[in-house]
Length: 336
Ligand code: AHM
Ligand code: MG
Image 1: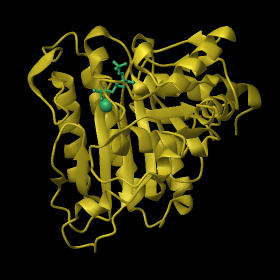
Image 2: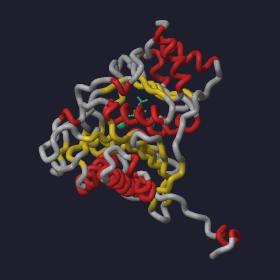
Image 3: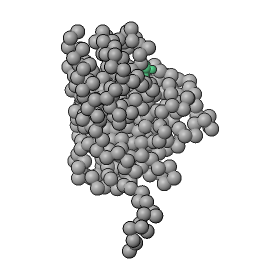
Image 4: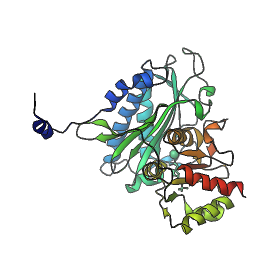
């Protein structure tokens, strides 16, 4: 048909998210198509939110919304917009029976009682970075419900524990927009191509380097950190590691996933149980990191995915990243 030289003129565009999902359908848990559709719904909302974020400076959607969310934190307008967009997409998609959102105190029932899944989501994470053009993200976690399909879901559907996640992922709205997710068979990333309006497979089967030289934490809280974290940070400095902290979990996580590193949000005096939310911040990233060959723990008991949750908005300390770096931190914990 065409010679190899002719073929080279038109560079192939690559694998779209849609084609990838179709090709890997059999590898999805329960493989009946609903989870695939749910991921498509999330991708659609991500495109819309990406559009809103990109024009944020042009229209009046920067700044505070004038209310506080369930955590008592001031909501930004974009927080609210992202919340509406994701919830609407998940409701309209039909596969999700209920949603827990960082922005809403109570479980949101979608009315799709025949949906087989429930979703926990932080629609826009890194709120303090929204107004200043710094990377922000969306984090999501998907469970197959345990209550009978056809009935109204209950809180138990959300409190199954991190190991029961059917899929999890995030969207990073950064120098480019990237959707990263796993369904139990490795972590893949899809970069958004604006002009075509499609996500394309860009990072296949991602693995975090076993070790790295980046540590990410809010060092302003240093004097409030437990002693083992202080010691660990001192070790990082003595090894001349790089301190890199955006203050957007998704951005810090993504960089460390690619380059090797560790992210720490220890308990502090202000937040003795940690700041980050277990269901829609810690669990999904822990699920991804495990499949990418790293680890995540919350205390000496190591594994964050094994924590049995009791509340949909509960918080946890988080240490996540390259295995060998976390082994060093764990060593400091044991010696305390
Ligand atoms: P948010 O959900 O209100 O945006 O809070 C979560 C964010 C994370 O993205 C980030 O890693 C952390 O809070 C930053 O906290 P701090 O400003 O205390 O360092
Ligand atoms: Mg958040």
